[in-house]
Length: 280
Ligand SMILES: [Zn+2]
Image 1 (spheres, rainbow, N blue to C red):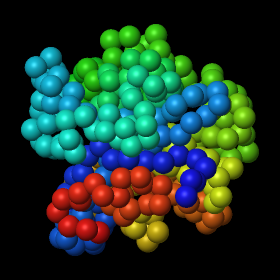
Image 2 (cartoon, rainbow, N blue to C red):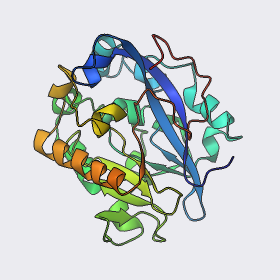
Image 3 (cartoon, helix red, strand yellow):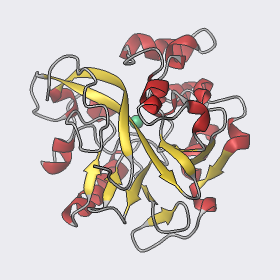
Image 4 (tube, rainbow, N blue to C red):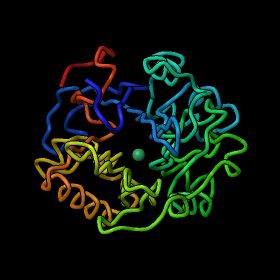
């Protein structure tokens, strides 16, 4: 069945204790995914939402001492040497085919593959880019942001969603392509300038909520992450407001997907990707 709107593949599986991402969730290990979204749009072309992890997270550690520390602390894994290539191959595409990447936020597990997309132009929120630029390397690193992962010509290929299509509309979002088919929803709190992407014309309306939470159960049961994940907010008050915003969309019938939720979603095209640890 072909669903309108985006599909998703996985660049990385991170086994974590359920209680870490869901307060009171216990010690059971669940396989968090790091998803990459894909859709085709008449104006934007072949479009990705984020890129997931890539080998650059490991290979650029000589140039970036902070990225090395990140790798040592988080021990990120990728499903193979080239997760972006293999994910795109499922869609009959190569990295060179990608025209546009919508960057929800600049965490390493969302921008790790940007260097592998030579033809793509990039879209993000002004707030996300301005925050990254205003901070020192250390401040960025402490928030999980490593500009080393950006292509050398990143800025020449970057535009802001606020300048691209158009107007803010009644759903508190920015019309990314100017045709009402995809709306950037501001979801600050996890990281400054984070956006989700809402597809109001799919049935049901679909909202990719990036990292507003790690676990769908946390949204449904109104539970926050456990310690220490609950210390990672850039702004806790804004994070709570973003969660409430997503819950309001859910109440209105929107189908919500998070980047890292371990439950398979019908838009996941790589259901056979091995889930290390345990099934959810
Ligand atoms: Zn994040």
